[in-house]
Length: 584
Image 1: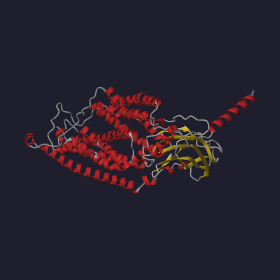
Image 2 (image 1 turned 30 degrees about the horizontal axis):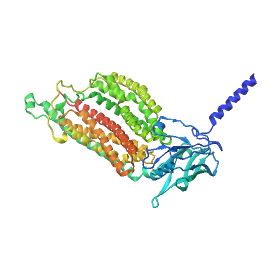
Image 3 (image 1 turned 30 degrees about the vertical axis):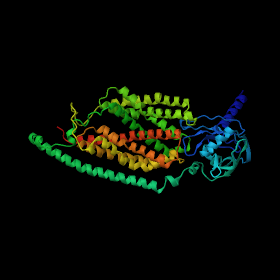
Image 4 (image 1 turned 120 degrees about the horizontal axis):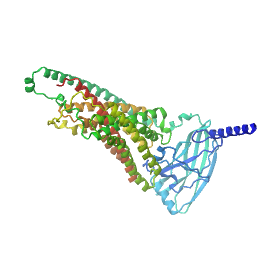
């Protein structure tokens, strides 16, 4: 019996060691002559990065090896349209393969037209070897003769360091002129080369430091930083001097008797002390927007920090998956700040407010995504979101985001829901006097976003290029600095705007401060039109809808975040000035 038990124990140990030491693309360790899987991902027009289709939607033929199924490992992969299909090519670790035919294709008229269309539209395809992306071009067009050629030979040069793959290069060779009825042989070749590149540095070749760390980028950061110093100094100097004069004038007014005060010409922000803390109109929507802005700010900060520390760009869909996870996890932030603000404004329908706050951004994102999804389904594009992924996203909203927002709302109402304003609120609202046109809230809102946009528009170019073109954004330190600069500039601008508004005896500062800061997003969206028409060569209904739909979502989220920055800074400023002046 002991011998049998001992034998079984050894067998279990051996079996476990085989299971856990088996080399694959997940642990990135390979034994000599072990299979290396070549995954075919997508194919699509070069100028439309998001318009992609399954690789075998073109009449390419697979290799002879048995098919291996691939599932979406992360939610981000599914949402980004990653469609990995097995190539069928035999590739073994450190095993060179001479030029070998893996399939041939007797070209029919339908297949010919598919290839001609792909060549005309500059179709490219993407593959993965050990999670390293590889790109290739489908064919070539001879404009002078109107001839179309297709590349039929794939030459892989794979670099390895120890047991790990650190480099993959693809060279497309042997072009064949497309014509109906011809037989096209597809071949491949594999050459293994020893490399000194470290495994941790294998993604460096995909980065473009000449683009992202260009002197213009550094200059724009320096320029924005100087703008911050100038604005902070200007705001401090002007407001301190102006407020000092205001305080002196109000102190002088206090020393007058009632007859002199009645005959005097009183004006300025002190006159609206009984209305300045009056709840904002549509307080439910306002508190939901502010709560969502707090959450977006927390998500942005967390994801940028994770990207700096974890290099999220090296894994497929990891940045999007991390964003979704962090957004769900920070839902209590939304509930806490939105719920407490709504309570301080005297709101009673707190459950309705909580549902609005939790569902505001997810409903807009999901609504836009599902609309674009119908177009993707019509085009049979790989960007079409699978039904299972839709169910997963809906479940996250209903069973994670909503309950966590409820928890935050309950905490916010109980811990910070009591109004503690430095001034009493009058029972009857004070009439708002007429003022000059440039003091109107609408004008302040339109002009308020110019300086914040000016501090970030260069960074917007780099972010747009990384998302809509073939660049990998990796300078998240720059993004963090720009995020801080944007927050400071937004707060400074909205404080000045609010001071002018209150001095004109207009107490509608809550929505004005929020919208003046949020108008930054309108300028970003206008800039996206310029970028689309002058910096890209996108075309077609699907790509155009995808671009402007998701740019609208990006601008909306940016606007809510900036609006929240503006409200937070202005609220602190208003409370400060009214708490330090004597009110009868």
